Length: 328
Ligand SMILES: Cc1cc2nc3c(=O)[nH]c(=O)nc-3n(C[C@H](O)[C@H](O)[C@H](O)COP(=O)(O)OP(=O)(O)OC[C@H]3O[C@@H](n4cnc5c(N)ncnc54)[C@H](O)[C@@H]3O)c2cc1C
Image (cartoon, rainbow, N blue to C red; front, side):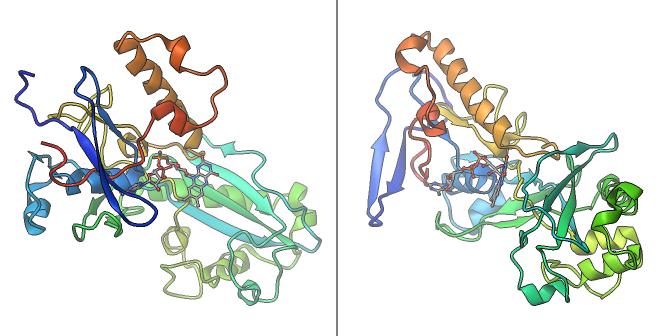
């Protein structure tokens, strides 16, 4: 009432049989939609709902509800570079136990004893994942940013995303130092039982260059660690951004320029550490739940169970698409 801003008032969603439904907010003060479709989903759904860069919406004949050039911008993914290190003895099957957090922004972790990268056994070039380990480094931040664009008006189709890994030299240097640290560890006395004595650093780099998970590899050898980083970079699915705080949402995660609409998920993050983001995102959901309840002056004890069973419970019915015309 009294606001000239567009207001979110409902969602369109499909059931498991593909039938479309519309759910409307009750006309009560403070009711709102919370969008939590993740870094790839939330920018896409905002755009499909008419909130986004004018050129993209115009190109797909989407009615503009709010021209917002920053939706889908500054999308980033923490670069991951993995080294498989063959061992002369069997290695205990293990997931990550410890994260090595370096002062220069590279986070180092290890997994051992099984085919964690899910390639064909022949791709190990005569070695086996049971006798070997994977040591990898992830870059925090990163400074390198990309963007997300929608390719059509179908919410079920993937958007197009470009992360521009290592476009900023500082990110590349973090990777180089991370790989140097891994190689130093592998060549140390403490590691000697788990490294083949005749295997050189160059052998390790070249072996990894030939494993087919390296999408960018353009040769069979690494001529520099910079090139190795670029050639072997891959995702660890820690993408974030696209609805960045300060540009698309305010510090209460409300979409700027729109009433009754928040985005609460990884798309709001400006940076992500080299460790795993899920715990931080769960805390974000939990924090916002309390924040919203406190703002609305509701009784927490009535609605917040002493044992939290799920994130969905905290945030309510949030995993629903918002489509064009459903925000006005
Ligand atoms: C394979 C994999 C392994 C990972 N391993 C780890 C790990 O070990 N530790 C860790 O901390 N992090 C891990 N991550 C990263 C972590 O899962 C994400 O950082 C985190 O889940 C992001 O949370 P989010 O709330 O932003 O989005 P998400 O958790 O992705 O939630 C978005 C939800 O929205 C739904 N959605 C999207 N679009 C629509 C639509 N149009 N309509 C309806 N629903 C929609 C999605 O199905 C999803 O349920 C992993 C990610 C992947 C992909």
